[in-house]
Image 1 (tube, helix red, strand yellow):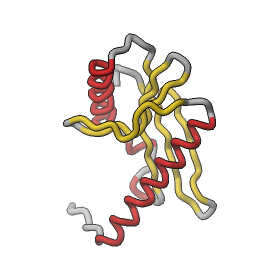
Image 2: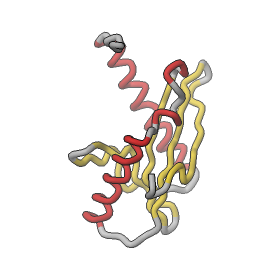
Image 3: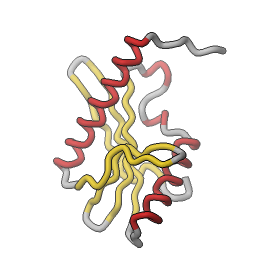
Length: 130
């Protein structure tokens, strides 16, 4: 089955919603005491949305937003392949920036509704075993 192509206007709107969701998620996490180290950290295999510090723990956070649950919720979109890429990116980040520190992988699932963003923060959503 072929997926329908998005128009340029639809893609631009989705990109803006994604940026807004990431901004909202970052502010949400910072209000809860996490400190931002890097945003949209890229490597050849992908990107990590947010890298933060909570106490001594390094937190790699994936922000996912859905406005339509017909294609699965935000949490469901962090599948095995995406988790594998996040683990790969985290290993590269640690190799480049040093650190024998505790690590955690979180998902910030956002739903866009009539009242704005609804947030579900899943601490320790998955571990190094994927």
